[in-house]
Length: 388
Image (cartoon, rainbow, N blue to C red; front, side, top):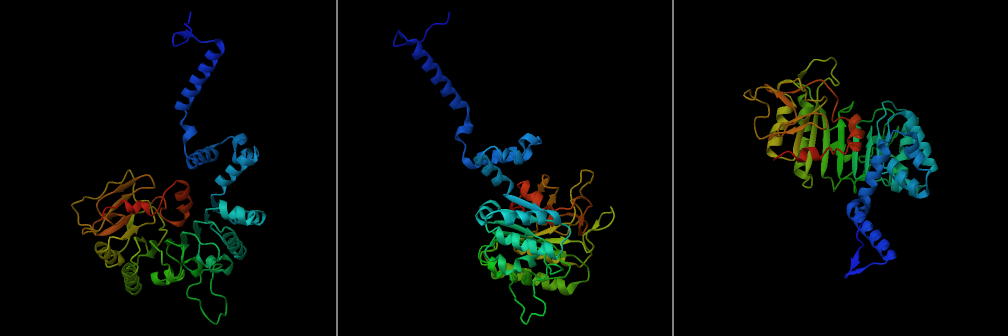
């Protein structure tokens, strides 16, 4: 027989014993349930992961949004936080959604927008202008071309980080009005005050100098991170000289700039066929940029276009001379999870005297931006791990 609990030697009445048992159970529950005390932000993250990982129709975000107004608010906060428009139909669909939602809803819910469709037309360009103009709370914005930002209706949308696929004015993304009497030097100057991170992922169809690309967005007094892209071609010394000279100018005049990434693409990109080859020929821009990187550690030179880490690939003999043999930095990079940083600065495999890239998954290019965001990968933080 279980002995009755006592207080100062006296047996407790029946009701007191029940209250004591309940209090003990409540005390134990509070000690073993840390979810009661987690911050609201972490709680929302847990709910978001659960919503996005479910495969059951009964627990899909759309179904759970009907449970209550409070839960509907949580679901909307989750599904609208990052919006990816990867086709013309999704651009049109979200354009219709923008017309149905209030400006307050869009301004507080849509924090990141990535437009990654493979095809565009004039209608899609006009829809994108209206979408960006309506989402005034955007912190991060990824667009195929900068011309969308030249529209006057976008003046209230001022993201902190901007990602551009290619910097050119190819149709339907022109920004100078036809037959204009005066060319505007900074069509997107309204972004200047807030923008701190500017990333141009790929070389454009028409070459634009680094200073001209930056000037498009105005003075950018708070710019701390900048990424530019360049095709590597042997013998194109004229543009190479201008490019390197303006990179040096940016490093010299922008003292607030913490990082400048230059992504180097092969002359023919994407390269057809499965063969592996050198990034460039002798006497190209690579060596010149490496010398600049040795003198200014803010410069990171990134050989891109393909994944450079393959399990079947044997790294070159380290006794061979390397193009980055000096104070530059070398990182052997796999796809997202396979980071292997060494004590050098250039991010590429090297064989002999030239950086080499191997065929594989396209990486650090515009189509992977949405995967970066959803995977929690930060383009800039990858290079912060490189030692000086």
